[in-house]
Length: 75
Image 1 (cartoon, rainbow, N blue to C red):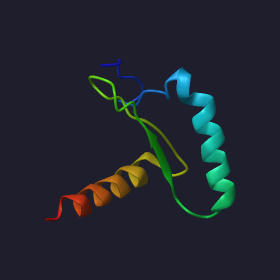
Image 2: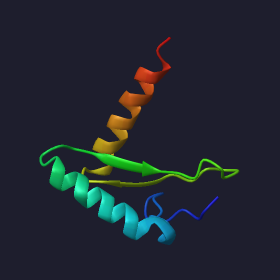
Image 3: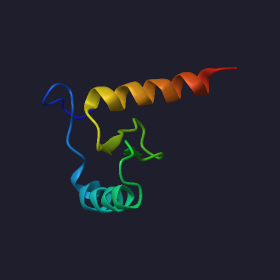
């Protein structure tokens, strides 16, 4: 597990940073005024590490992710 820094948040892994920033910038241009978050993870990793970038505050992003998870868990 990577070390925790700055209130438990790690920076985007260096190998993904430039691409994620470019893709997210394009999404923000294409959809102005919309809150969004882009997650990227290595599905082949033994312990997946999620990288994310968002145009919202961390609290807003966390609330949106929790809402999404709750909807997925409905059976």
